[in-house]
Length: 184
Image (tube, rainbow, N blue to C red; front, side, top):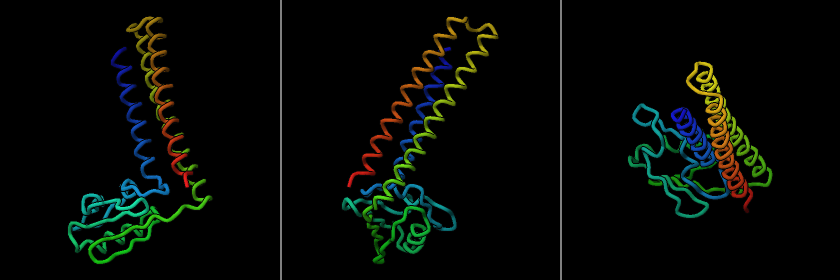
C-alpha cells in the first residue's frame, strides 16, 4: 500500500509542477523569460528552443532582450517571436532583439485570469485522476486479498489527504497568479 501512496504522491507533485510551469507562460504586466519558453527557432535545419540559441535577459521590469549566440540567426529568432502567441513585437538592432512588454488592458487582464483559472482546473482534474487511479488500485488489491477493509479505508484516507493538499497548493498558486495579473 505504501508504494501505491508514494506513486500517487509523486504523480500529484508532477501535476502541480506542470501547473506551475504553465503559469510561468501566462503573460503578466512584468517581463519574464518564461514567456519565451515555448518558442522554437528554425536553427540549422532543426526546431530548437529559443533559450538554446540565444541568451535571454530582463534588463528592465517591462523589457526582455534576446541576444543570439550566432548573429546569423537573428532574423530566424525575430520571425519565430512574431509568429508565436506571446503577443510581443520584436525590435532588432542587428545584434540584440528587444521585446518591450506593453501595459495590459483591463479586458486582457480579465482574459488572462480566465486562462489561469483554466490551467488551475486542468491541474485539479489531473490530481483527482491520480486519486481515482490510486483508489481503484487499492480496491483491486482488497478484492485480491492483498489488503484488509481497514487498510483500504486507511489508504483511501491518506490518498484523499494528499489530494486535498495538492489541490490546495494549486489554489494558492492560482490566487498568486491572479493577483499578479490584476496588479497594475
